Image (tube, rainbow, N blue to C red; front, side):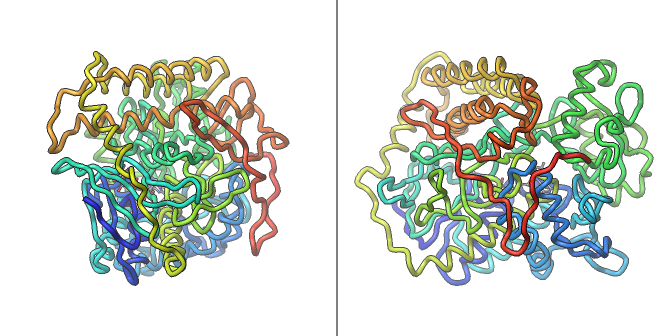
Length: 583
Ligand SMILES: Cc1cc2nc3c(=O)[nH]c(=O)nc-3n(C[C@H](O)[C@H](O)[C@H](O)COP(=O)(O)OP(=O)(O)OC[C@H]3O[C@@H](n4cnc5c(N)ncnc54)[C@H](O)[C@@H]3O)c2cc1C
C-alpha cells in the first residue's frame, strides 16, 4: 500500500512531535512511530529542561549557558548551533508552558528551576538554577502536552509502524520515502512525501547496562547507513553516572542537583579528588569516570562494581515532593528505602552524542564539506547537529529535541513550496521485502536474543567508559563475527500480527549495522575527549582531533573520515576558544 503526505516524520518523541505541531498548521503531515507516540523514550526523562529563564538564579544569561555547553562538549560542539539553542531556549520552554505543560512552580508562581551538572553562573563560578522541571516527570509532561497539540493540528499518526528502509536517491541527494512494517496486521507500507524528517532517538541499546527504552536501537542511523549516507561522531556515548546497579534504570541527576552525595566504600565523597569545585555536579563524563576509577581500584561498595548515592539527608518530605519517581524506583528495582539508606548505582549508557549529521537548520548533510541533502531533515537524539560535541550536559537534550524539532518544523514549512513531489523508483520496496523474507525463511541455529546479549555485553566491557586499542580491536572482530552469525538466525514465530520475533531480529540487525561505527570511531580517535576516553591516549589532542568523525559503509567495509573544522564561533558571540576542562 502506498501513502502520500506532504511531510513524513519518523518518531513521535519530543523532536518528531514538536516538528509535527509546527507543520500540521499548514500542511498534511504524518508521523510514524514503532511505539505508541506517548510511549516514546522522551516520556521517561526525569530531571529537567535547560533555559536561562533566571527565575531563581536572577543573573543567569544565555552567554553563560553557551559557555557551559561549549565547555561541557569538550569543545567539539559547533558553536553556531549551540548559540542558537541557548538563545532560543527560553521562548521554547515558555511556549510549552503556554500550551499547558504543568511545570513545578516557585513560590511566586513562576516555572521552578533546579541545579544540574556543568550548568553555572559567571563562566563556572557557581552552580546555576537553570533546569526547568516538573518534579521528576519532566519528559512525561512535555510529551503529553505536545501530543495534545498534535491532535489539535490533526496530525496523522501511524502508530506501531516500524520503518525498515529509507528510499533515497543518491544521485540527486534527495530523500524520497520510507518503507514500514505494519506491526499490528503485518505487511509492508510505502510512504512518500516532499520532505522526510527523522526524530528516531538514540542508540543506548547497543550496551548491556543502559537507561534507554528497549525501542532505542538506533534504527534511524542504520537506515541512513544503508542508504549510503554517513553517520557522525558515534564514538561519543554518554555514560550517566547514576544508573541503578545491575538494571541501569536511571536515577536522575536531579538527585545530585537537589543535594545528593556520591560515596565510596569508605563512606567518603570521593568527587573532592576529581572535581573539587563542582563535586557531584561536575559533568557526567567526569563523574562516570571518577566512579569507574573508584570501582576499578577496589573502592566500590564491598569491593563490588557499584557506588552509593546518598539522598537520605534531604529528608522524606523533600524527596517525595521533588523526586517521587526515583524514590519509587529505588524501592522497587533496588530494594532500598532512599529516605533512610543509600542507593546502589553504577554508570549506565544513557545518551548518544553521535548521530545523523545535520546543520543548525536540521538539514541532513552528506559529506566532509557539510553539503545539504534535499528534502531530508533530522532532529533530536538521532541527529548530530552537533550541540553536545563530545559530552552532553544534563537537561540540554530535552531542550535540543524540543528546540530543533521546532526548527526542523519551521524549516520544512519554509522549504515546502520549493520541494517537488519526488518520484518513487521502480524497486522502492525491494530492500525491505528482501529483509523480511530473509528473516522469515532463515533456518540456521543462531538465536536473536543470544547474539544481542553478547553484543551488548561486549560493547559494555570493551567499548565502554574506558577504552584501549587492544579492547577496541577485539571488539571490532567480535562485531564482525556477530554480523556473520546473524545470517544464521531462526525465528520461531512466522505469523504476521504482532510478530515481536521479527521486529527484534530487525532491531538487532540495526544494532549490528551501526555498532561498528562506534568501535571504528573510537579506534581512529587516538585521544580522550568528553565521553570518549582512551587509556592509551589520556589527553585531548586538538591539533589532530578537533573534528567530527564521519563513518560510512561501502559493501560492508567501514570508511572513516573527518569533516572540516568544528565551528568555533556564533553569529552574535565571538565564541569560546578551547581550554583545559577543569571543574
Ligand atoms: C531515562 C532517561 C531520562 C532522561 N532524562 C533527561 C532529562 O531529564 N533531561 C534531558 O534533557 N534529557 C533527558 N534524557 C534524554 C532525552 O530524554 C532524550 O534525548 C530525548 O527525549 C530524545 O527525544 P527524541 O524525540 O529525539 O527521541 P525519542 O523520544 O527517543 O523518540 C524516538 C521515536 O522514534 C520512533 N522510532 C524509532 N525507530 C523507529 C522505526 N524504525 N520506525 C518507526 N518509529 C521509530 C520511536 O517510536 C519514538 O517515537 C533522558 C533519557 C533517558 C533515557
